[in-house]
Image 1 (tube, each protein chain N blue to C red):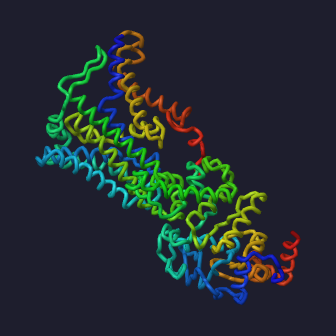
Image 2: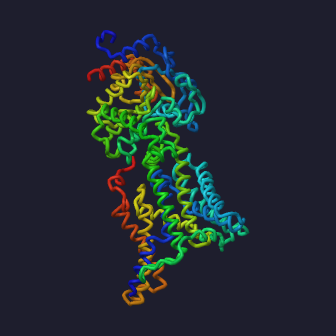
Image 3: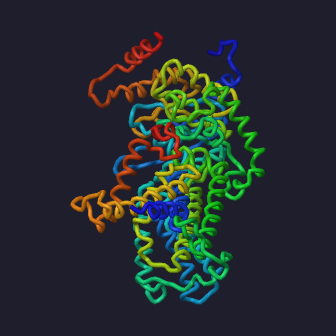
Length: 303
Length: 328
């Protein structure tokens, strides 16, 4: 890994920061942007999330993986304020975030996307983008009635939006209704729109779900470019190949808890992770975990 | 058949006070339903509190007319806050349930506090100051077709000015970044939250704006009739307003005005034509008598609305492509 000569600066920085971090759940990071402690969410008798301690390294791409029902999306919703935990505290840029409503979380610089893409269908693509900009004067009712007060700001926003549309190759769709875009284009639009907020951290909930393979590569490229722009990325994903390709660090959840942490290669060889994915504890068959690890590894590295 | 009467009545209803009141109610409802996606089924209550706010201030408490107008507007704002605070955090359908109930409560309160509201007879004698300002000296007659009294002309003038103001406010508001947030909330609240907008606050602002614009229609009804009665503000009022919004095309600035004109034109036309046709023998009495014609007009208008929704779901001014975009 270290032998790569033309590693982009963002990747090198992230690797450097995570070099000495121990591969264990709840590991301390050099410069964490997000720190969560004892976050618990119960649905009736079911404890969906029970995270003791977690730190997310600034400037790195961290993947949150785990089997279905592991509580990844619930944990995401808790962190971004869309759901309220039964217990727990977490800080973002050293700001306590527990109990903060979602819109304030976004204003603090932590912006999320959704597993089921939320393109605003009957708004044009460019209006979707403009909406993302924060601190707009014209978004107050009375000031909005007087165009002179917000026209110049609107032009700046539109310029920034157009640049992002070009970068995400959506400029040809500028005037179309967002509802007329394909599934993959909606994912791109959602990510571009999130960048309009100018966040420090982007939370992507299954960014690759339902995207055709041709667009996957382009989406991956965009996620990587966020890191080069100095943003922190935390994303939920099922697909191990994707995770291996783009993430600097992987956090594995199983049954609501963080069960493993580490670089993609070590985590995927971790017997606990394989157990969680293949369900060794549930089907009652005893696996030699090293053997399974080799199999999983072998199957994956063909590609 | 007396075609002059039919044409006259129909043409009058294109611009008369009743049409204006419904247009204003629909402009407000369009802000709620068309732009923000708020299912307000209690628009009649906003007109009711404004009309009664004015009438009670003047007729019951003997206070000045202008104060009555202010009381009416404030009542509409307070009603919006009362409806919004408990419901806007919940799912959209809760607002629908609460508003339909609230409108009935408001109407029944007008009946209940008869000491102040005049009960089911309502209140009169609050519009003298308004008509004292009437600049029109004589009635308007256009041939044998159209005739409006001086009082009607005055309320129509004021009403059309109110429509012009309301439409201008909606036009400017919806073209602004504020309107962009409002329309985005209609599409998906959570997406808007995730972009750092205080969705509950925006929905409240929209509820107040639409309520206040609608309440102007309450003034037109109260002053046009020079009387208020509780049953004017029943649920069917709100349903007509919805029909008007959909007829004109939801989320179109001029849709509610055009929708109201067409709605009342058609109703007046059918209402005038059917009895004439029965009297002239074009419609046999075994099919329909003159007394039945009154019910048939609503059946026909309902049928027309159904056909509209099937063949032109976007309404008259809507964009079919936009309506056909499936929500998510």
